[in-house]
Length: 510
Ligand SMILES: [Zn+2]
Image (cartoon, rainbow, N blue to C red; front, top):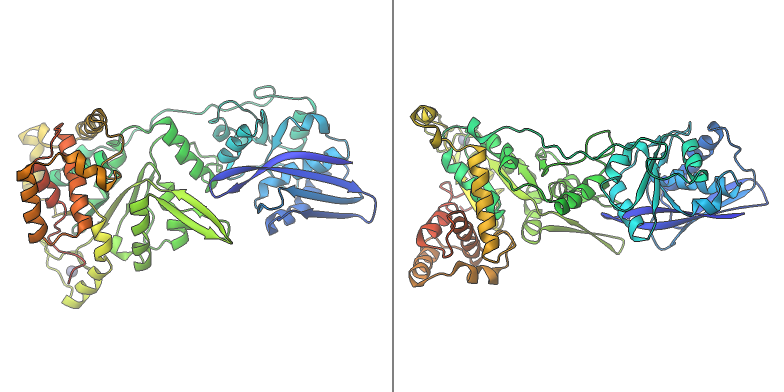
């Protein structure tokens, strides 16, 4: 007989409902899966056969045809194992096919009939809810992730047998299997007070956090670049529920949530190594998956040793830094991954790291330095709002604490500067962070007077700014004025913003 089971597939970061029709007819024993199924779905036949037999049920002998519809949609992923197995078993009346209609089913099967966790649960659950489905059967280790979505009942199962029992007894969430709760506790982190003597850099980090401005730190090894970047999540405004959902969807699709780890509870901090592949950084693959840039969505992306990244990857960052999304095309289908991350980069000033250092001598030749700097092209520097030149910490700076504790900025102070600035900007009617605001809006938002315009005009000629860096300077100045809670952008704000643009080393320009 014919049965239909509801399941779904992932397209980019969206879930789509799929119907699995199973028909068992007379004829030679055969097991076919049709409907644009990928190799991994076709391979599931052996797992399904073995799982059904090892769970103590008979595998039907007739001619089995499984059709995945709509046929126009590519179907990939081992999570279709369980729904196909349930489809086969409802065609043989082991599963009540009428009751099965109330459920969507997802899960991977092992040969013994155990149900393995899968990737991309969250977008699938959202798609099921939108399709009006009330109950989902899924691997027990995916329950925590799935229960983030309200308005749909999730039933976690460990074995094929449990899935059959759940359907035949019309179980709902909480009926038989324990459901873990989504935890919302915050993790304790390190603090900016751990770093002494980089107060100028901390100020720039506050500007970066308040306006979501990309930031580059250039300085010798050991000056604290990595420590400064790692503490960034301690000063960002708390993640909102909708941001958390957006980011968790991306992590879910990338398969970061099913390995027994906790759900995201904070803004993500991603720090990929410079040897990372282009696909892993930006996203890609035959069935496109989000890369590190998107995994950092609504959080921080830290690119240490920035000049060591492949020059193609550095160039490829240009578009996402402007548009905050990555677009990948595969076989006529366009996939879009959001990447609204705060990007922080760190680099040494030269291959040995000590060019311009006050305490160590640089051992690089002029050619080596020139080659090293060329990796960071003008166009990418143009898009980096804040460019800091840092020095090693001096002995006097370490004594700050003895002079007075208020001289060392700590995370609490910095974080309230950030949230005050964000609140001020919202009160002024600007919902977007200055780093993301449109070029037209920023001109109006700065409320520049004649003196300020004159000052900018001079700076534009003297510093040979590009039109893009001119606009970016305005954006940074607006954020600085927000931190100072001032409606009008003043010359001081503009001067500070320009100070963040003029890298002493003049990297990238020969
Ligand atoms: Zn050097």
